[in-house]
Length: 465
Image (cartoon, rainbow, N blue to C red; front, side):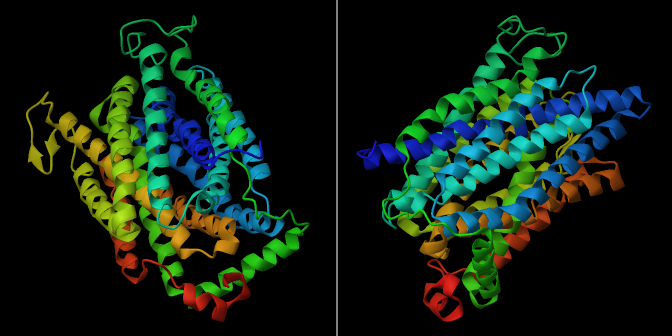
């Protein structure tokens, strides 16, 4: 396979986005997350909590689970990246964390609505989330080897768009054939296929094994076509050497204003975006009373706009650079966050609506479309911006720091939402921390240079040279 063409390498690399996206689309956001909140709230209701308190507590438990996984990712991501760079290999790590992805996703089949264990489900979900996040670090670090500096923005945008398309297809299959509503039928009015029992919610629970199988099948092109760069050298570096290089890089960050500002900015705005993805379905279920199927349709709308605008965002990135794309997307998401906090069954943007009005649902669908559009372009531009800021010789380490930046407060957003929700007993007030995170990220972006502080690397640290 030494003669794999550049085109095949790019397509193989983009297949990771296609294969891995269902973990975010199906499990984190639109199917399993709301389902977990539903069955957890049901158990809390049976335990004597009032309905609103039970839904708020379910949202809080989901947030605390994500917080724990986020802390693990934040601590280990830069360390693993530094070790991988020191040893000169990335693909073995993709294999390892792909296995965790599959194990974690498949384990969610255990979410039986009668006998489920909240801690066990959160553990399996966390294992899979750690797998997908760590695998993404190493695949992102391969991006610079796929094309020239002017091409990688379009490649990144196309990959992210392709991933959203995969998410749409996977979500549509789940809604049409498997996930059942309150009456036990799927979106097209049939019982879940494969003989799955709707009474035991097997159609919805199948989202875990389905996500695992999807990943296994569609990662085949990645492993067939993606190879380490020709100049990659397999080194026998020790863990100590990798950690030493990481320490040198971190010590040099204060002198690298653009890189440190970008890591701080992306830490905040990506955390807020992940909070929107993570709690969007849970919020719709608790505040608007949507079913899992309704939330799935909402997810399809968001994923379609995400695919379209990730592609357009990649083209805008190539023409204008990633920084303007990032700035515009943050402003859009900030306005959406403010809007979401005002949507309930009785009002939209502070305007009272008639009982039974469809306006809150329409407004939330519009918000979902905007989240998908701005979120897709934002994430694509963010990883090309990281390439521009990073030391080419320490790219995996840089994306490890990028993952740290994404996770250092990714556990904070769920924690803030969980805490505010607990303190206020209101899901609407619970999501307001996202507004502050977007604002802070936008402010820090002002110190980020479009092409980074490359001139200062050689003066500040060998690791940044």
